[in-house]
Image (cartoon, rainbow, N blue to C red):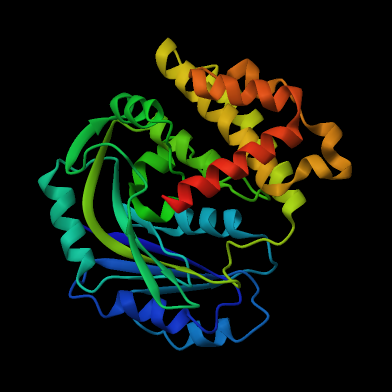
Length: 321
């Protein structure tokens, strides 16, 4: 089974060697690494160039910087493997993980998607935590509908793409590419991919090391753009959800959109900016389904400042538990 490992690169000279070597040191032969430099301004491309002559390596230098979505899309188009793994260039994978993933995939009928756990690491203090994005019972095979109902019913749908692997044919045949120019592009891509899939396997195996640091390529200091892009994503998701025939799933997805909309605006503090006129205050209330979320949406519609205050208090309480 061949894996295509897509590694977008942008100004990660401090981390890139460790990322690439975590793959080439695997006890596994059937893979390719697609390194794509998005016009780095540091020494990242020179570091990647050291590995360019290795037989499993494809190195691409883009002519102009166009962001993470375009870089991943290029990787999907260049990939030839049966399954795709997205590996951010400041992260790395476990030793011997590709062989273990291959066994998991084969033993569970070659699902369209397999989700795994991950280690969340904090560069500042070397802290490391085991985490799982999903809440459904692990080591089980689910249909797309079962997975969506189960996760959304628990008011959860973790969007980060790097903690899963994806059958390439699923992406290509359904034209599942990332929306260019958006921050938080995973929030739009992941629901689309899940809805297009037939089978999803949840594994309790952990292979991905996700490094949290201030210079991550997925970080963005422009909080206003964060909020504006989340609003755009919610509107796009709403259009796609209208085509979902199952009533229960459509209601659950709409609730997810409502919660994502409120969270995006609260986290970015968009309501404090000149762009607050763009906020559709009743949009969450029109889409919320679960009673606790309807109440949140009602507060949001009446007074966004009050919603933000209560939301932050709730988050603080959860952290102290």
